[in-house]
Length: 403
Image (cartoon, rainbow, N blue to C red; front, side, top):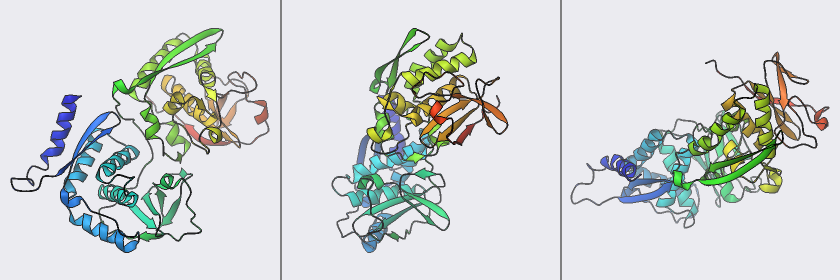
């Protein structure tokens, strides 16, 4: 780790050597932890801009003009180098920017200045980001083409802009009471849309993991697991919005968590038929965790990634469906569909031969596999009786790539 930190620091520092020769002012060093990994960045003093004026369009434009005139290129390049080196998806790159902005301008000391730095760093990194203000609140948006729920957005020139800092106002902004005006940006190198898809998690420090005991009974046999989980997963997803089913069902596990769970599950189902193995995974997902609706745990809907479901003590039907989907995909890689009923979400799996009354979708027959506890101990192919007359929508269909 020490060698890794030294290499990272040298890579970032090299770009500053030509500018800071003898007799010139030294830059400010920014040091912080990024999910178990130390980060060192350098900030040119010309990029330190004060902001204590009343919040309005003119003062924001003045800040923008001042920071644009400063030497921010080395800092932006260092952030982008880190993004490339560690293959950060947009959401994780934004977390890196948040931490950098916190070092430059602590959130608790000057929230508006902290938000302006986040906006500037993201914009200068090539993303299409905007600001809106009503004179009291400063809202920070980014352009995204994806389906994002439970946070404000607006359309401009046919493009969707999604609010990144709605949570900072307690998810409570009265848009009818206040008139929010967009502040025009003079930054011309903003082209990219922002994606909320997460294809990889950080390489956490192994020492930051904790063990969690999971157990359940299958065919009168008790199974015990010691799964390694990282509490920083909760931080990463603390303000992650509700995204579409395809996006959050495909969020992977971190390396240590994967290694502590998947090989053991594969070993346990190795001698089982595919149907029985899927049944085993279904019962594990159903009974190894306590059930509790999101409204009682979080106060509103919140879709948990597979690793969040493993980490949390309680989870609901959507969370279990995501975990079960991941396990079946990883171990058997079978075609699956996600069924959304008015008050429930479940999974149907395509076997070589359907089990029970099949769900027919695009000419294929899928068998219900219920990963959430019900009044009855449902087997593969059985649907909860209270859903017999309910309508459903197929909200995501997974088809394995040919190998």
